[in-house]
Image (tube, rainbow over all chains, first blue to last red; front, side):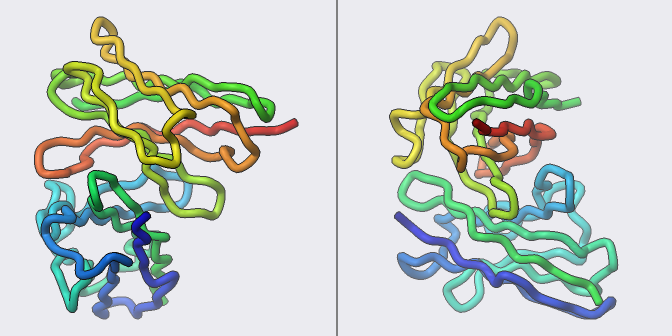
Length: 109
Length: 118
């Protein structure tokens, strides 16, 4: 069973840049894992930000971008806003199953 | 507009079963997979499986095989998830979500809370 790992928590200053990563226990993450990134605020359902590594949904703010970095999927926030404080979840397609990471709690301080 | 609406909150005893529904609207129901995800308190998200509404074919992760059954009713554009042999650790918010081409999970239901309590 694949384990997907994210940073448990990160802190960033308003206006700063932060990169969240998503690693697979079975090796390098590639585009064949169709990496997805979701944002979730307390009491709300997850909301898709990025899919298939780097594609954005129509509602994804331009400051969010997805990529592959050092064998991991990555979500970069540039020019962080206070409203970006949330939990961020990655999702990978591994051996015909979808596997979530444990989530990253992003604090904007 | 696309909407996924789950059934209401449930309270069940250990060992019982629960049926949740997810009614889709605003698009052609048979065109896209529906997945179920869940989130236990203070824990990350977990994928529970998916159904192809066009033919009823399902795919479940090994951990839920034998405990989860997914079905659909095309006449009402509704997907059902039956979860059996409930345990305290099944207490969670359950979400349905639509997968479109290219692995995009674009629309999610608001979630429904299932509480397992003796």
